[in-house]
Length: 394
Ligand code: 3PG
Image (cartoon, rainbow, N blue to C red; front, side, top):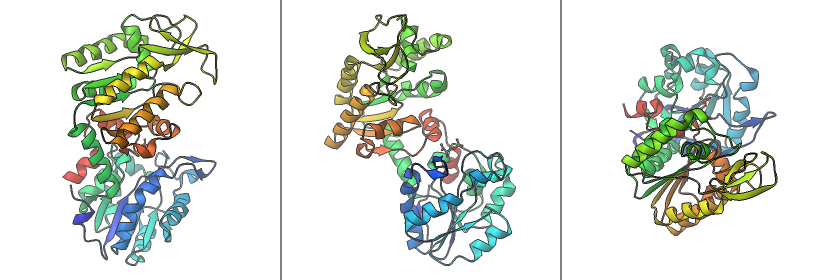
């Protein structure tokens, strides 16, 4: 695919697809990461003299104009992050947007209203894609985190205007390629999370690609139970035992080692400082639940990491939001950061909770790469082609 190196942006109207789907609470943005990671692309284009037109979705207004889902608050956030004024248009297509774009001078920026205020966005309606294309001489997609959606502003418009990957998109794709596409071996994957059922394709794909698959989180209980271990009242999916066994059998025939917990931290309830203890497998009392993996498991993971060259991490080991059930996640995260800094490990993390877990452990900045993507990172781990990325290489 083409990048900003291939785009002579001066004087051109550049439509930039960003992902400004930021977490907002009580009208305030609670995490600026996606904007911070976008700024280099915006700055580069403005410095090159582009007339920059930024578009994005925000939340899920389902084709309605929902005032609380306006992108207006992001205008101030972008202006502040860039240190230059970003204007705002009340619609992403039509006369108002067209007039606002026509008024832009070289090196000026405009933010368009939420693309999902139009039903055509999620339907990838060519009419909406055409409305957007009308505003642009070039299209730059910097929204890797929305690239799993085949929408008008991610996929449709890329068919109509010369399309390029922005710097953030480029960085995400390069990091992911280093992690799974073309990695240095051995590759370890850590997968946590609550349910096997939501990560079936992901686990299936990883058993084909990695050398060691470490399974943590509540989904590990399902695997342990499938092996016949008692898991007390731990969260698990009884209906997934056969599937879990099948995944273990597939891994074996692919030469992928699956590492399951060898000890567990169990407690009476999912509550902070609930009385807890470390127990071995088959020693989980019937009235206790596993909320983290134990120190022997951490040791086993650390020993695999010591000889690994690449790590892909998705999902925490335990209920890291409440102490002390963050212990294993924090201990492994610190070791990952240490090995990364020592130069022996390329470490890539992403997807939902993972970023908050890495932040909680204080190591997000010390990993080789942390993705801004949630769902897109997961679909990529599943080995799926992301429509927004595919559209760039067409
Ligand atoms: C995300 O936040 O993961 C992306 O912006 C995609 O949002 P969506 O799940 O509403 O499509």
